[in-house]
Image (cartoon, rainbow, N blue to C red; front, side, top):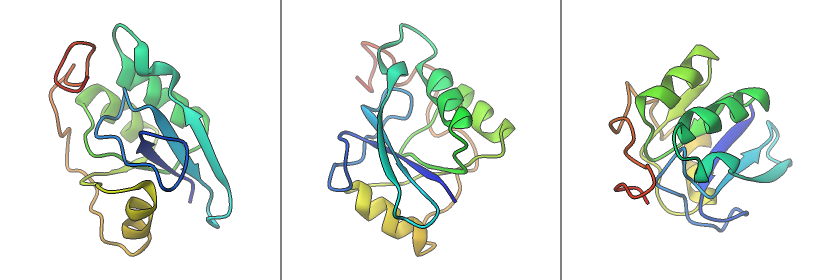
Length: 126
């Protein structure tokens, strides 16, 4: 299963980023764990709709699961419509989040974890 983890940096030792749509990077890990790709988040500086842009990028990359500390309703709707599971409550490093996911310690979110625009430029997530 291809997994995307919201990150502040481009590698497994990077801290997770608490924001989804405005995270600095998305670290993509392939099904066997041997494929690692750090993708700078092009949607992060969008004036509006950063979460939706980020979600669409992950849909295009055929991601099957997202590990995100926070996710808003619009981004979550795009991810869920594509059948992508979203797991919340990630902390620590990208490697920590990935380990917890693989060990079955993370739970899929039951709905948005923040209100629309939470991570917007000038907002609480910035």
